Length: 321
Image (cartoon, rainbow, N blue to C red):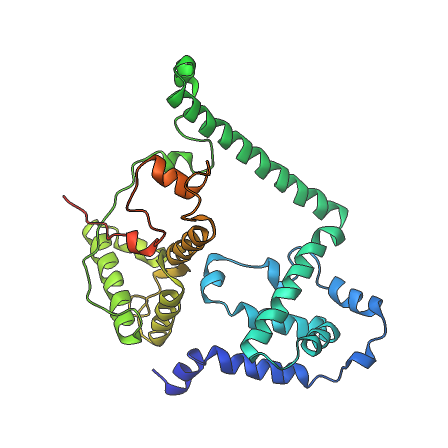
């Protein structure tokens, strides 16, 4: 691979953020040059429409590969330079360039997302609310089915409802989702996900398995349009995406790992942390006599091994054939 191309692909996020902040600071605007509140409002309004801002243009591939903060920052620099300068001045220089860029873009996202519905034209507004209403109806119908199943399971007097409760909730992919899923176990690999070299080998092994399975099934031609999502925690996602970038200059789609997309974040560790924080907040050893508390429930069901240490209770799932 060309060294210059590889370096560009792996350019650190810190350096990218620093370069952008320097570029943004260099614009010829200051707090004193703002004409009025209306001036800022007009700048924001110029991109505050459904489908026009980068905030409203995304795909599965974008969510895993796109540098969102940089793209949002450049949109602000182009369409809302005074507002960008105002935010940078307010934030100051006590935080890193990465944190500053993330903060500025998050504020911009909140403001624009909130204002979008207010400034769309009538046709767009009707379309927006029609979609929201349709989504609400789908959720309500799904909840009816789920609650009916619970009632039938636990209340014998409602057993007459069993024949009329749908076995599959109505949705566009009902036919596919009603079929049994097949789970194929991948071999255990003694690789370290914190190392790019090992991540390249992990991704390459996934590609090998996909190619083998599809060719044995006589569906080798389907590989041209195949996209398989790959998941991992926050750090693993970054490493796997970096490993894929290292192969970007290869000759074949298989060597470039193009079939493995998008690379998404799995929230397993985040959910662990959240559950542990909830235990620290609500699991009190002096609340055994208070009905409804976690500690009271522990005593009631005699779970003496519950101690609030959530992560120590997760065990590796072992599959037995």
